[in-house]
Image (cartoon, rainbow over all chains, first blue to last red; front, side):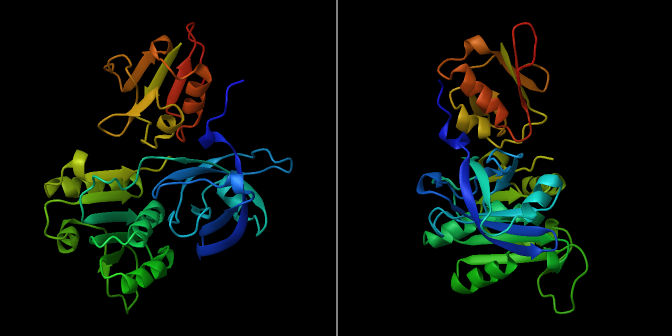
Length: 247
Length: 84
C-alpha cells in the first residue's frame, strides 16, 4: 500500500484562540493536538485548512498562508483568514478547543540564502499574511539587513497586523514599515495616501541596485507592482518573488 | 496516460513540486512544468506522457495533481478519460 506523503497527512490542530483583526478577517491560532501532529515550515509557506465533520473526516479544504513565524513558538500555527465563501464562514464559527485538520506545508515563496538584501515587501490587503511570517522570521533570526514594508489597504480598519508592525518598528531599527490608505483617510493620518504609484515607490525605495522584492496581493495589485518595478530597472526573474491567490 | 499543466491557471503555489518533486518542477516563470517532459507546446499548456516519468509512482503523481489549490493539473488515461 503506497505511503501518504507527509505533507498530505491530515494533522489535527486545536483552536487555541480566534482573533478578529477586522470585521471580516480573523486569525486562527492553532496548536497541535498531539506531538506527532506538529510540523516544521519555512516562513512564507501555506497549508490546507480542513474544517472537520463530526467523524473527523474533512468537510472541505482551502489554502491559507501561515501568518506566524517558525521562530515564534514551535508547533504553533497562525492562519489569517478573510471571510469569502462557505468554508471561511464555517471556520469563523468554530470555537476555542475545536479541532481542525491541516495539510502541508506547501510553497516556495520563501526567503532564500542567496537573496540579496535589502528585503522589500509589498502587500495589499490579506496579502500581508505570508509577508508577516517572513518579516518576523528575519527579525527573530537577528537579521540586521534593512527590511522595508509597503502595505496598501482600503481603510484604516482593514489594516491587518498594523499594531504588530508598529511594535516591531520600535523594537527593530532595521525594520521600516509604511502603509498607504486607498480609501478615506482619518485626519490624524501621517503615512501615505492613495494607490501605490511610481512617485510613492520612488519615495519608498532605498537607493540601491541590489535588493529582493517579495509581493503578495490581488492580481491587479501584483501586475501594477511588477510593471512599476520593471520600469525602475528591477530584474523580474532575479529580484522579484511573488505569491498569487487562487480565485 | 498524460499529464497536462494549464499554465494559464497555475499560480506557482508549488504544492505539486513538494508532493511529487520527481515529476513536477517550477520553470523560470515560477509556473509548474513536468520534469523532463515533452517540449512545451504552442498552447498555454505543458504536458508529457506519464510513461516518460520516472521515480514517482502513479499515486504520488495523482496526489501531486490533487494537491494543486487551483486545479491546474489534469491527468488523462491513454483513451482520453480524465483521471484528475
